[in-house]
Length: 247
Image (cartoon, rainbow, N blue to C red; front, side, top):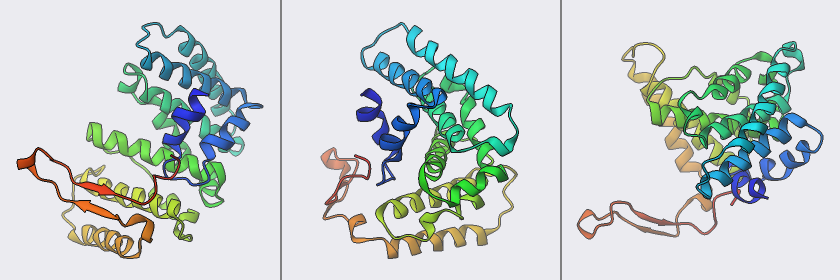
């Protein structure tokens, strides 16, 4: 219940279909790799919420998940599927809830390797859980970008094949915003030395402006109050008519 009510909505923040809340628990019933990953994640979250020092339970399930992940990665790439991608994303979520392992973000690298592989690229195009897990991975990568200011090599071209660029629902627009921010971060923290090409920045700026101009009414606030430092209000107040998808 901890996973379904507390953790899954965070992964489904840009997904109206709520794949992580609805499909992943069902998948766990016949996929031990997913089941152990969810038990480890939920146990770790509960330990943090209750200030419990012991992590024996979460470590036990996490180790079982990792063992199955290693075995799956040892198979030919043709066998890698959305279940493996989802398990790696869950393992990364575990790391985000563990201060010690989060310093290394091992499984974020594993997900990156999957998304950059041609076998997995097709899953990004077909929708469903594989596509949802791919977008969660991108948000995980952005987390590392922002916190560590370290560039990550991500094949954003794979995301351009996603169904979100052919849809006009709220989830699609939310994920496009994530994609635009990822493009900005790749320019801001490039893998190589900046080449000073302003054209790339201008192209991204145009894409963001196009997204902003075409955004649906649900993305437009019904109330806005500007920030006012003198009144001890450093952030603006922005109210929307609906909650974030997945809440």
